[in-house]
Length: 260
Length: 260
DNA sequence: CGGTATTTTGAGTATCGTCAAGGCCAGTGG
DNA sequence: CCACTGGCCTTGACGATACTCAAAATACCG
Image (cartoon, rainbow over all chains, first blue to last red; front, side, top):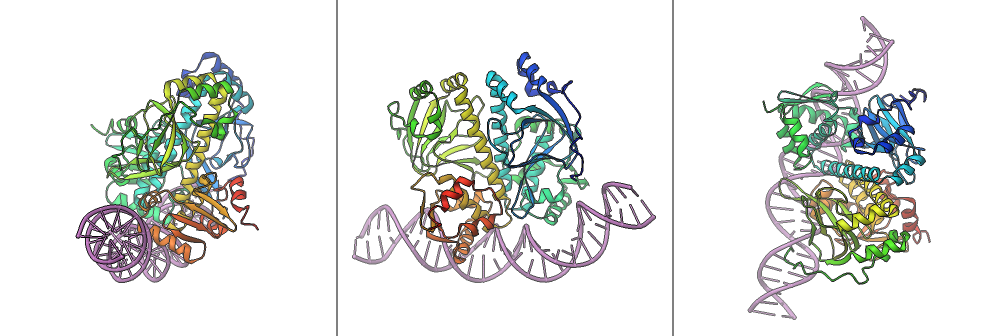
């Protein structure tokens, strides 16, 4: 897993793809240019470590492509997933101390890195960018709270349902991870069974059983262990009980073809 | 609960107590003065609603004294706690849309409110305040992730242990909620049994049993249902398995007298 | 095609949820 | 002062769920 050399790093500077991230489209031309100048695009293979807890990396990262997982190392050495990062999400302790979690690539991914010092300088000079970061953080907070509600579900089945919905919500814009064809939503789960189990506070066997129980009830189809087809969105929503787990935009997007 | 008149509001403007909040001490004199000018101090009785999900209050709130709980309303109408706010914490969707959760007073509390428009204006003009808010959010995020780790604990006992430790960590600076006397830490739990149970994804009976199981093992003492004495901090930490649930400063503070 | 890792299934046990009953405390009214 | 009431917390008994350990099946990779 970890024997992939650090040099699995494509060099950047040229066309780092910042403009493809919608959120940055609203920024001032000059600011985008400044950011472009300190931006490198680096590729990481699935499983590779990108940033480690306890250290303070010299750069700010923005996910360009792929999925990263944030995880904490527990006393017994196991890794506990505390969140996923999708394209557009940031990490890296702006203005702050050491990382509180590791960042690893959940699938092959590309990360835009910005020298932290210089990034902070640009932020201080541009309120719009600053505001962008603040809103990004607020969104991150809401998602963390969504996780809390899901994790507080007393039954594994309910937690798993919430997990699947959250995957759809987060991956909606990433077409190779979520595809909405007529009546069904197909979603790829980038987390291994042990990771899912640990995240949901249970064991791999229980995850497997709950998943197959949902399949037996016709709520989902298991195409592959990591590829799920959602046949009945409403049933899944019922299992969770949280009204605004999926925002309106996501709901509409997921239903758009299903309604035909 | 809700029949306390809205006028349970002490008038503000004069000496709103902003300077007592450590975080704001570093701010520019002028900024503090500007904030003071738009600050009102309002008191809320335990159980009173302070802000509602779906609305966009006209003010930014900072907890002055007491404990607030953030909670989401589920489909079945129950309220689910997703976090606690202690003195110095903020709420109120700066630059952003509607609230995603309710805010209620968990105990009698005092809140500093700032007109949102004017607050945002001051923020835009002062990078230091902006940075303060950003760090506040980062801290909030870390705490939400701590909750996630605790909630992912498969056993009620482990989740409860984590809950108690998190209480200590959050309430450390509030002397009437956490007192460290020789060898023991005494902490008051501002949440009712139903709230704790729901937060931890279990039932009140299980909370009771787990609490008494910890007491039987000599890890804690139950002085009153809402007043816990921690006799063995290390045992509690073991139950959780998360190394940095308590930051170094908190650990030292909690142990300072216990070491004698 | 074989070998390995992952996932699934099965059986037994521990934990937890559920329902019902009992205890404790504060407030009320006799 | 004491019985009564209602809210919350605790305890007990039983059934449902989930965890553990072990084995089988499947997917993955050369």
